Image (cartoon, rainbow, N blue to C red; front, side, top):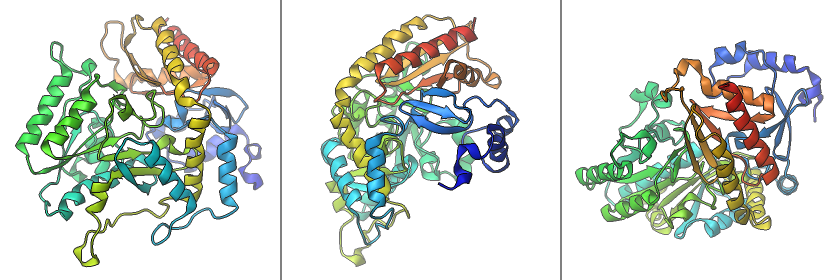
Amino acid sequence: MHDSFLPSARSPQQWMELDNQAVWHPFTPMRQWQGDSNELGRVIVDGDGFELIDAQGRRFIDGFASLWCNLHGHRVPAIDDAIRKQLEHIAHTTMLGHTSVPAIRLAEKLVEISPAGLDKVFYSDSGATAVEVAMKMAYQYYYNRGEGTRSRFIAIRNSYHGDTIGSVSLGGIGLFHRIFKPLLFEAHFVDSPCEFYHPAGEKAMDVSLGQMRSLLEDYRGEVCAVILEPLMQGAAGMLKHPEGYLRAVRELTHEFGVKLIVDEVATGFCSTGKMFACDHEDVSPDLLCLGKKITGGYLPIAATLATQDIFDAFCGEIDEGKTFYHGHTYTGNALGCAAAVAALELIDETNLLDALPAKVDLITTKLDAVREHPNVGDIRQVGLMTGIELVASDARAFDPASRTGAAICLAARQHGIIIRPLGDVIVLMPAPAMDLATLERLLDATIQTIVDYFA
């Protein structure tokens, strides 16, 4: 490694100054970032298992799986070795007119473990692009069949599907999407089925499904797909769907003959306690979007899985114009696919799925300690995905300007953990492979931080 890349090449303060000069961070109020001189956990230079290490050598439990993508921990020997071995052959070659062994092996593995009927794998490089691919496939499927009028999409309010223009059009979080409204195409939204954010006295699931049915009836023959995050709307603040909602949506899409796109970028690969959230309700979508944990959190690979029926609609003679003209330079990158194969094989080799129930139970049991805390409005959990809603002592929401959630997550670093908020929802999203002892330390530190902050 060139010496300039070594953490010791500059002091932590110098690295921070250089960052302020040149780097623009995602989802970050940059004036506040640049004015913050706190070095605690700021410059991450190393990882060890389920811990992150900053430029001063301080260790922190990675409590949100490095933005929900870490699966087995950091510096995992099997994944490291897979990348090194692939480097001995080739790092990348285009999939336009070519293929590679890692891409083939990963596609085989994904088809094997995904819900039944998903037989074709299209690669991209982020969750948002996986959604863009699914959207375009759903529309062109009908177009290729002579039904070009089917251009409408139905999505869930407070949903999040990425930050590209198409995926933003299907997102329902105003904070992220409102400013870009003039650039977006029209989509139709139904209420979230989450009871916590619905008027008292109404069954949120029934309302949501009723709205969806009305839209499908009103625009019969014009809707190409319904898209949703299954079981848990992550970026909205961990909004938990009631049992049976995913299955009911699948039945509606069958009834009205429209495609179902399931976005499992956040929920996939053990996050909900099973391989995929769809597995909880035995649902097979028409299009499945995957990303984040697919490579164990190492490299940017994403995938859109499709049924044979959808794939067949894109096959024809050249002059029929049925080709799917979409792709990315690094589609099916060999290093990323090699890492993904190793990460998915580790799930089987470590019996990870069998170990998940004990971890899910530990989170539930431990958080009982703050469930009745006057500043905890709700705790929402699906598998390992957990959101702790913070409220003022009178049960009202905090003033957003106070950035209470951010303040608590910053204070948590004093307890040796790194977590991130979604507004005033504290998110816990440990790597699924995290051992019980480390998970218990993470939970104890989170509880103590909340208690101390409001003391």
